[in-house]
Length: 556
Image 1 (cartoon, rainbow, N blue to C red):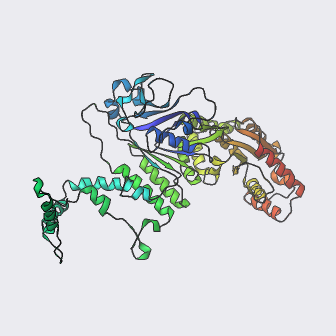
Image 2 (cartoon, rainbow, N blue to C red):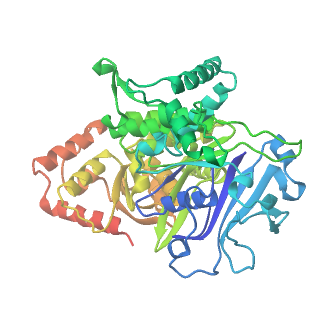
Image 3 (spheres, one colour):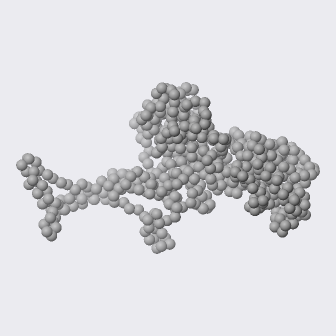
């Protein structure tokens, strides 16, 4: 069982948005774009330490109705689907349910009820899904949630519920059933119980004498007092007798408290416990052949990159991806890490780009069908230039994104505006002008992207257009000579609704800056930056370039 689609209606900054989930999906976007709102909506659906509060969770902007709900579509394995009630079955092994948080309909939302209803055909049922009073009875799996800021104690405490305690309980209960060691402990404790009550201190104090003194006091009531020391129970072993520690190899395996280590290790320990908690649990047993009891865990992880350096982030990303491949598990993370994004570019549909449109959150996602269209559109310039197509062109287009969208270029996914430059010369100079505060844009998180050639500018335009990323273009016109005229016209005509402005140097950057051009194209960036550092570029041209860049970035 896996989630395929989620629709959220009237929840915080979300008016109504839908998203498709892959086995491993990433919520990305700038701060305050709505990533946590999606995570919290799922926590509320599964009643994971969070309940719907109208004053906090209902939108503050105008809405079309006063309902608030979360709808989820699940894909079921064949055996799960066969066990599902016939009235709930949708085509293609789909189960579709809706949890009402707020409604004007009488009896839709009740306290102490799951308020989850399944679709029966095209109609939403009037009856609770399987009559479920709570989510644990709704047969829709469970959620494991790791917040962006957390304490290791919350996951390792033994005095109350925690991931570590749940793991221990699972293992200990499994062992106790046939444990010779525990059986031996019980017999030893029986012997201890008898002998200990007989023993006395040097001054004659004993449990036996205490019991006798109590009985002397109540003898006239025709009753007697007795006392036993209970045997150790498995839960008492876990709660009171277990201690844990970490051993540092660099300190000769000295035993240290977890709090003695850095936040990065602590957070990875938390993730390890959570990962294992999805593994160490009983598989639901069926009471009869037609009981619907799927085994499913959704892991929600906010900012997994916290306290981890890039290499550790990449290791964690691989681990999360492996975890999500198990048939009963799915992973959804929210992240600001360009490393996480870059390492998942090979699966573009897994990336959910969030952005604010005024007070409302919008979700941009390229599904498999849209991705196919995008890759075909990327080939159009090749056709215009009269170049032959091959059977592997579409796959090569996909590989291009994997090669180009490294952690640096993935900064574009978190920017308010991206300036797509033809090459490194423009990027290096503009980045330096921004660093030296020659270019200042108020209230704008901008990123300067090196397209590594005008032949590839349209590929970024196509991708950014479908992911809702605003962008402007800066490139050389090369005097419209030969094929450059066709390329320039194609770039100009390739604008989409998120393309702000384009600027085309009549010839090239060096000509615009009035500096000599380096014949070796690989040395062009060095040549431009040498002239800038040594004040060889006329100030008037720097000022002109600054105004061009401001106009492109401010765009609208």
